[in-house]
Image (cartoon, rainbow over the protein chains, first blue to last red):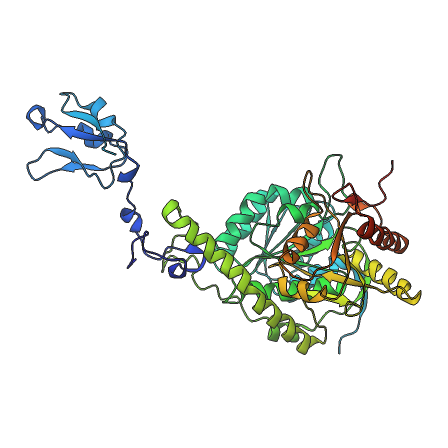
Length: 97
Length: 391
């Protein structure tokens, strides 16, 4: 898709709104559904990766220092990672208005 | 040279599907549609038509099977009636939104309760907004012709929309009429093979009926609206070409003495023929009346309707369905909406009649015209009347 969903007009749609490009669901931003955002105290993190395993969106991956962190483009702010983290690294905070 | 043969309209309809060389038929039997699919099942079982006949457990499954078959580019047909049409309601929207060119015959039947297998347009009106092209027919020949035209319209690359061909249950589906079936070679020339542009194909994968979040849904719906409105030009073109090839011409709005009539009656479906007889009789008695027969229901023919009524003082609309708690019969409501912005428009009177198979006779239409003309002068405390209702 050359345009993002937000730029597509009705004239750009294929017959029956058929999607011809495989894998373009990754362009779909689910991060803006979020009302709470995860914050991290990496000093407590053992890099066990349980948060990434439990994340229902597969939005968590290791950053360049090896710590697990959510990609806010996809993170819906469900908070499951905070529940599952054995060392309580993650705290959910309200998104600013 | 083909000659007219007396045959049941349902059987003739099946023959038309055979002439159209359908690839897939998926249907669930329901009165009064049964003779259509029984005949098609026989045709397929006897090897007269090389098609898959998919036996399904419900109408929801029938339309779902049709959806799948149209998605791979197969020419697809089904038929249903009344409650069966209701049961496939959800999938009707999916099919039109996915632009799958399925053709469906609907033998119009009333909706329960009380249980009624007889004809009215309640089923058709409940699927009014599903995004299908909808054509109403008056006689067996129109049914055959508008099954053939339906495939051609549906599969046109500029349209790619499903088409419903409506025929009144029993009043039309079970009549034995003289019908002219065209030759196979003539139909083959008129109806080229289906070439769906983006079919399901493992060599070129596509995603159909995808997730449509708020950011894109409205765009998909506007595309659908524009497409359905634009389909009208193609429908006119197909009907014109059909006329040139077969000598029978169809137009969205048929006018019978409209030009100089002071009082116009508007009907849809098989009762239009009886209404025509009534109008002719009244004309013979010197009454200044005319008849509009609405054939194309979706896309709605706004211009043709406005033109047809422009000289009339009174327009009496007879619906064969109710809109409970609403302003009038559903057809009448749309006629009113189409005319409201016009500077000059007739007084409009709404009747509902012929419900659940109640006969509409020539005398009945005469009474409707007379009563409607009276109401146009005196007004009425009711938004509409059910013609002939007792008590």
